[in-house]
Length: 456
Image: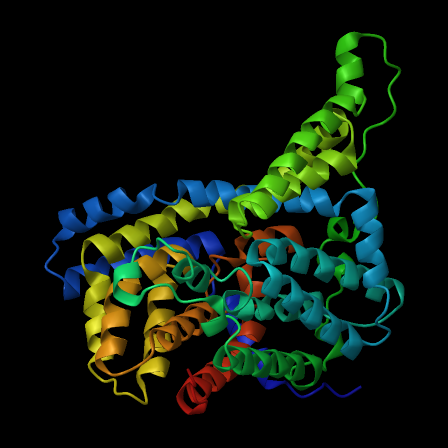
């Protein structure tokens, strides 16, 4: 049998396998790069840069805990009997490789659009379940490619309902309210400028992974059980064995009544948050909601504890790597490197090109400070005045920021750490595919931000 011709995506995946290190090593390399850039382009000396790095190192501890809880509680939720059956039912529909890939893109896109934190775990679990059911049906797919297809829709999270920047500028007391006032989400998330470009992006991802990039060489395809047999064992929920209760402590531990009382407290507070205060979903409330669900669905404390213990190993990457990214954040912010980079790019802008250039700038900074919310605090003070000086509506600048930061996530493993942990892969295993999407979506972003009219 003749050897099949190498696809152009194979070159990217082969390169990634050979040259792209593990995500933790990428964090170390980026730290060194940021350190060198600060020495070259700011007035900071080596000691000043190290101090800036150290001052920033622990600034993401709260975020690290939030992300860890999203992974742990989201994973525990998905392994409850009811959720296992629901995910299995949803993933049983596709009956061809193309259908599997299109399905994972659509479902992941919905998850990321609704909430980025939920989407991280949801996309990974959908991906695993589709891979298992495809193998059971003898549908030949590549698990690494499937994970790339599931990860790429992360690009749209900031354009969706949990976008940090648009939600922040829509609040009454945000940090730049004196400069721009309150910008309702009708002018950002639900503005046609954002919706049109978001829809075009999803269509592009569907076409890429559903048709254009599909692996052709069957000898190189690896199923989920070939990749890691343990990953394919996803149908059995984590539940403790029934226990013969003999003591009061065992009664409290192995019966659900204590959990139900606490669960009622969770429900009352959620009702107060949403219906009395009228507040929206954020990462803390999302974790609160996940905890509420697993408390009720597992019932007994013993069942919940066993599920959480089984879920905890998936969070190790978040715990280890996020402080290093916080250190990079410190270098960028406290040495003034972020302002230096911004001044270079903005100098080349005009009224027509500013949105696209602002997005590109945001993407560059995002590679070193991969955070949608905290990075906006750094960039807004110079992006907003620059846009205003060129006559750009503030809402349009916010939307440009939303797109630029998300694009970089396709080639930067920071946000992918929880996704990778659940899927059981490293970034280099699927970045070759997301890199192709990065190029295509980057072109769509630049052209769209430039030619789509922004009507106030």
